[in-house]
Image (cartoon, rainbow, N blue to C red; front, side):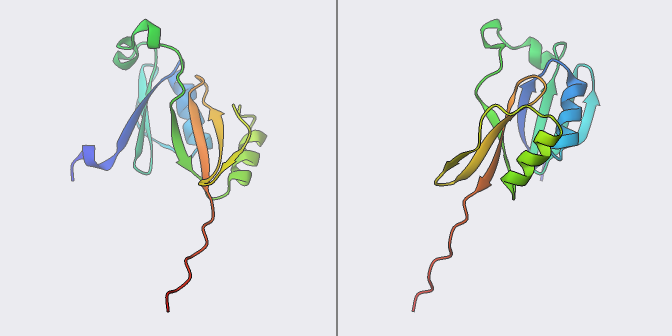
Length: 134
């Protein structure tokens, strides 16, 4: 297995790399994989590698001016107990960008990192087991 098989990587452009590292490691269970702050760092959680690119990083410099703002894309983190996670993160003073939304697949809420990038916290709906066939 090669390093590219181990992670799915997502790049977030951030204003302050260290603030982003602190946010993801303190509140969302990521660990630092590599840091070249203030330009760049990457943090990992399971198979997700989140690339945090500051204003002086090559990743940020390659972004066209018209695409420089925070987008509607987001990473999707599965949690076991959404209500407990929301309570824990509200207690820490973190900014939510939506209320809890419930749909057929489960419940979700949007949280913002220090640069305004979105994180979706998602709890899957409980599905009843199918009845055994006779």
